[in-house]
Image 1: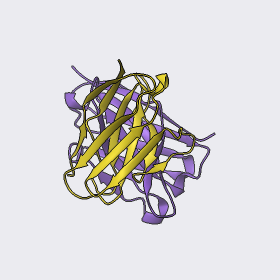
Image 2: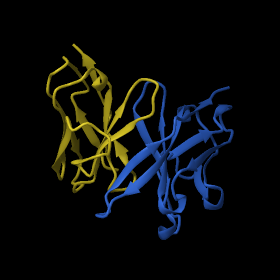
Image 3: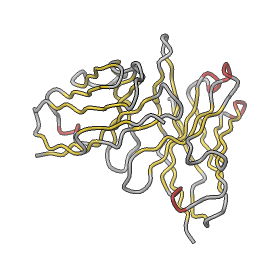
Image 4: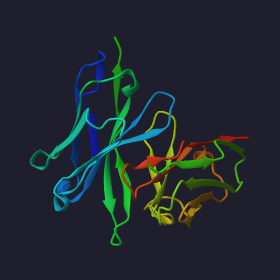
Length: 124
Length: 107
């Protein structure tokens, strides 16, 4: 079964750091871009960033709101995706989703497999 | 960043109705637009990608159309399980951006 499962959420103080993990199963991890998407309580969805697939050298892209503070990495040998979050702010409080990206033959992308999410709360 | 504006922000409809949600991009995005459904307390679910391609397993009452800057999601003959929040997402330009969401409620 294709699955992604986040872990590592919790309560952290403003200015602190937290590392989220995402374990994957059921598909060839290195063939897929992987995204992080977040959702603040009662709010809409916000794309956080992406690590691209092996063919694209695992390059990364980020939303402006997290660039320079968050870092996405992956370990294909362990089928794991990571989100390192530094200098956390109260506005980073959200559920964080790990998401698989699939591309069809024409190159169109789709965020097709979502984890259940992990809650990050930034508060003193 | 490309802005996506969904309309309406909320919508009341009845089982069996046909509803349309629109998504307008601040600049042309070719056909790089998807639609996602989210129910309370659950992760979003992909419905449609590349404007009009139905994701495997999604009922055929869902359809998408558009190009350039204007896109629509249509749900033909609403079912009880369709009452949820719907988001559009442009995935052709970084940073990716979501619309603000459309909450579909039972009338």
